[in-house]
Length: 255
Image (tube, rainbow, N blue to C red):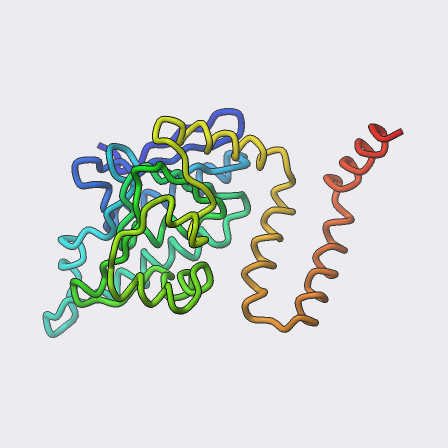
């Protein structure tokens, strides 16, 4: 059975992690399949991706059995090797894909599964879902970008509390803390995700991609540098047909 399900309809791609019996935990093979699926939908012209999980969980994190298979020359577990070759490669891809990524969190998002979820541009969670980063409980540090994402989304105090204590964060609390965009009743999760996707697909992918890049870059630049970055980007966007078409439509409707 494929570890990923994939469909594209009306320029909206739906990708789901498909190991429900294992709570969609992932290893290197699943990540390779997920990356191939993302490449396929982008090449196929999809304008938005919705990522979710099959079954009762979104993703329980890394498959520890798979992790134990990676050893160094002395026989020690070498987690850094698959991190560099697969996990980090996936996260880098997700941060730079040219179309928006919506994560529909249908159940628990734990460890690397939490990292995967909160990396998306828009995160919508079912009310029964929760987020948890229990890395310390198994003697590991947070990975897959959590040490970059968590403090930016939560602030230092909450980020440290979340990753050190490893406690569950409910969907509603995740919204209150700014970890995710919104939550909804379980039965409406895909309805909400599709509504967001319909909005995003109507916009210029270049505009949305540049917006993500500017927001990420803002953490590393000064106020004046960011103003200049915006001016440069806006100059480029102003040359695009999406802008001129939208302005003409607006002026026509206002007259």
